[in-house]
Amino acid sequence: MLRTFLATALAMFVGGSAWAAGDGGYVRINGSTSVANSIVLPHQAEIEKAAGVKIVITPNSSGAGVTDLFAANADIAMISSDLDEIVTKMSKAAAAYKVDKSQLRTVSLGAAKVEFIVNEANPVRKLTGEQIKAIYLGTISNWKDVGGSAAAIMPFSEARYGAMRTMVEHGLLGGKSVSDQVSEVNEAPLVATMVARSPNGIGFISSTTPALTRKGTAMVETDAQVVQHLTLVTQGEPKADVKRVVEAISTFHQ
Image (cartoon, rainbow, N blue to C red; front, side):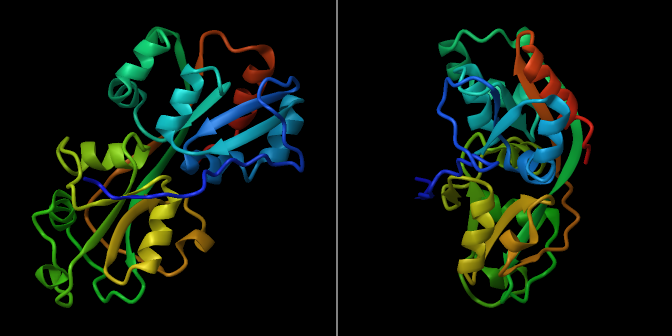
């Protein structure tokens, strides 16, 4: 089975105050850490000023954001993968919440790249897309097979339904799931943390990942091209304050 490294959920109630679910006067935005870190969090004050409403940001994952939207635990979902792919993978959740896909509205915020990283002590800094594919499918399992030292490769990935994992499986692995030898972490930014702690680790992160989060890792030069599509999702006709927040966020494109 995939090994899961448990981590504390990143529930970020920014702006100096925390509001309980159900309170009025704020808009809840949950989902992709890539969208949160590159657009929403850096421009929070400007977004709130333009929209005239406080926002509560919970960067968890694209899948979690969409689930929260389905369950009315978020007003806006941030995603960094194709919405149809996410909803298809989450078909049981969509059915449970009686979601009408035609009522899901999207606003594009641009794109980011998926980057592959290794521990900074690892001398391997170049891998072909085919080599990375083989590592994540489990057919290459030792660094000596890709020009490194004789040591077992420790590949890391975010959890199932995560946007980057979805894009890597779709765009690089030919639609196949990552191998059972791949260790899962709960949230995408923790991939970099685990690679930094693991001398033989490899993982993938968003190009929007902050430098501090990348500490202890090095980027791999590769011909593998995987792109994240950064998007906001709402369900049904957005309320006026939600619509203003979406409009404010959409002015900050990648």
